[in-house]
Image (cartoon, rainbow, N blue to C red; front, top):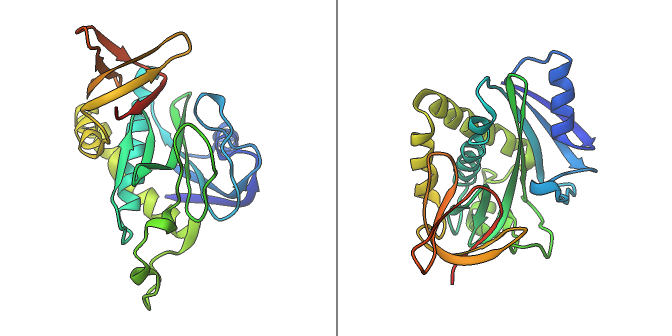
Length: 244
């Protein structure tokens, strides 16, 4: 596995795409100590101060775009597994479609881009600090590591570069499983880590907002929601808020 690391970049996704166009062979990872033009889902800015984790994985993928989109679930599983290697006071959970939570607060976000014969998965993880505001309250990893582990002779937390090695291993394992066994296996792994599923949910779309019961993650990656009147709605994109 090749790691390409920078002190600062505009965007790791943009740099990974540039390297791919120049012939860099997949798989490889691009990590930056900070980003000046970090992007989140649906064009939102991703605040990127030093100390946190910002990287993009570039993997070979020659399937259709709708299948490439499912790799965001692979990445979410990998981030949760990577966080779980630390001595946490609470275990990570996943929120549809691609947020990773610690104690119900957002610790990581993902941005997937399908390119010709490859997929780029941008991953941002709050390690030492987190932004205020946003649709979901945020947190960072160090808030959730057992203080005893941090004070141990063998360092529990080695920063963003150490996290890259752990995450790359977790992602590679999850990705290979996905390719070998398909989305059914990924769906089962994701559901086992899901927060609030099944349970009450509010869905906020550009043209409407509605509440119901989130029932399951479908094979196409959509979230199935049943309204009080029994109507079924399959959510393919939008902001969802779990809980009553």
